[in-house]
Every structure is written in C-alpha cells, then in structure tokens.
Amino acid sequence: MRKNIINSIYASYDGHVFVPEGDVDLTPNQRYLIYIEPTQKEKKKKILQKISDRAMDLGISDLAKQHDHYLYGTEKQ
Image 1 (tube, rainbow, N blue to C red):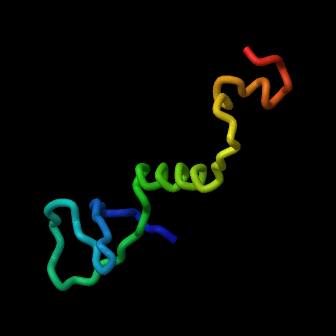
Image 2 (cartoon, rainbow, N blue to C red; image 1 turned 30 degrees about the horizontal axis):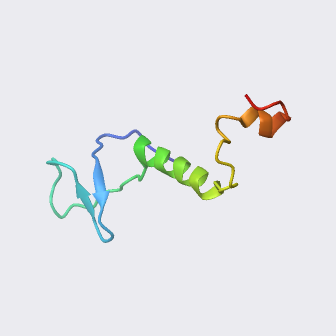
C-alpha cells in the first residue's frame, strides 16, 4: 500500500542506476524506498507503440481519403 509521498524527483534509468534529473536534498548512504511510475510522456509512447505494432500495410493508397468506401461500401468521392 502506498503511503503519503513526502518527496518526489524525476530520474532516468541508465540500465544500472537511477540518475536524478537535478539536485536532490537526500542524505548520502541512506536507504530509500522508491515508487516507480512512468511519466505521461512514457505512457503515451507505450500506447502509440501498441498501435504501431498492430498497424499493417493493406496496400490501399487512398484508404484515409476513401475510408467510407472501404468500410461501408459507399461510392468513392
């Protein structure tokens, strides 16, 4: 269960350690409990990546312009 967060910082993970994105007011060699939560930017990247992973080339060059024709069978505009 998450307790009230007293302090928060932005940090990047370099594959080995978390690197703060600025000065921090923390005691060296002190043990801290860190909650990991992606920023909104990272969440958006993941959503866009999922969409991109599912995308496929249908070989239709005018799909965006004529989507009603391909979806509903209406005449091309």
